[in-house]
Amino acid sequence: MLRQTHIIFGAALVTAVAAYGRWSAAEIVIAIFTSSVGAVFPDFDLSTRHRALLHSVFALAAAFAVVIVAVSLLGATVIENAAALGFALGYISHILLDAVTARGVALFYPLSKRFYRIAKLRSGSPGANRILQAISALVLLLSLLRWASLM
Ligand SMILES: [Zn+2]
Image 1 (tube, helix red, strand yellow):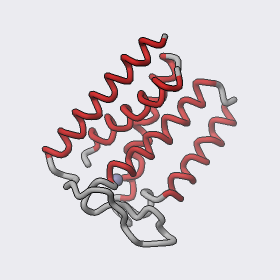
Image 2 (cartoon, protein in one colour):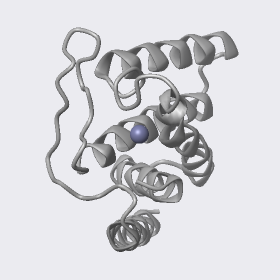
Image 3 (cartoon, helix red, strand yellow):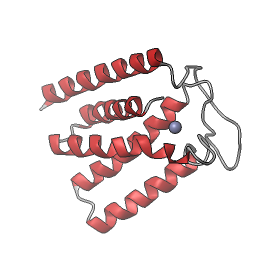
């Protein structure tokens, strides 16, 4: 999927979690920012084993471990925890979104080189990207409305 699709899908996932977790506005803003980093990070493997090296549950766990250590060193305040969770949600959203494409993702690389998918959308398809962006924007908006109604 396109980078902007990954970013808005990650933001939608963060706001959906935030709405149910009753996060503060500051937590939501920082988590959306870090989710955008997490949502694009896996594609740093574009020049190597794309959709394998950084698209596996092991890479996700390793990246999250690094973020958790960094957050702990910074003092692990509520805001820093939201930043870490935002990054993880963005990363997870990236893998989910790539899993709905025809190529799928090597979820258990390097233990297995098998690619898994749950749908067969074309990643570069403008229509598929627009529909996913629209759904994400709707989820984001509805989640923010729910969040605001609970404040
Ligand atoms: Zn990807």
